[in-house]
Amino acid sequence: MRIDIITIFPDLFSGFLAESLLAKAQKKRILSIHTHYLRDWTDDRHQTVDGKPYGGGPGLVMKVEPIYKAVQELLKKKIANVTKPKRRVILFSPRGEQLTQQNVRAWTKVDQLILVCGRYEGIDERIADHVADAVVSVGPYVLNGGEVPAMTVIEAVARLLPGFMHDPESQTKEDHAQYTKPEIFEPKKGARWRVPKVLLSGNHAKVAEWRKGGKKGS
Image (cartoon, rainbow, N blue to C red; front, side, top):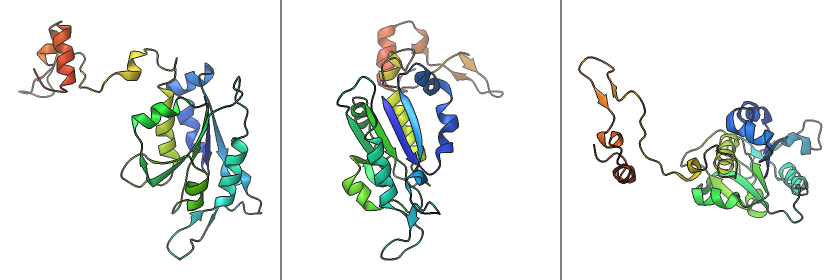
């Protein structure tokens, strides 16, 4: 899979992409991730990517032209060993559809993801209307830009790709409470935090039942 990130702050991704499983996955060519500086698609001396909003209001809005040019160029990138690649352009916005695991699973089936990271007061709505295949929000809150949401999508998609996780079971395991040694932890006098007895029983059926119920049981 190829992932392209359009941003005005490409350096934000340097450490994120160079560490842990994402770094290993790129070395193993499970996926390739590329950051792109949006200002490279401007044609004025000041490399302008924003302007005042029509109708008035605070802040600046990211312009349609450079983003459109960037996306169009990236859509022409060749994908190794794929003659007719499946591609998706994703725009991040607080007004977008809430990101779900269903979205993530669907995106693992494509050959190229283009992630558009907004900043300032937002992006010219014509990108959402005519360029993006999906407008996505990672939660019911507002962030400074689309870079953190892009990182979220990259991690969520990457961990479902074959070969990314050392243990394939980790890709699909359900979320439940977890414990490890020590069996009893005493943070202060009179306090004893114990591991639930069912997890020490060796009864796999009861353990599985407990995990389905979250923290229920003892």
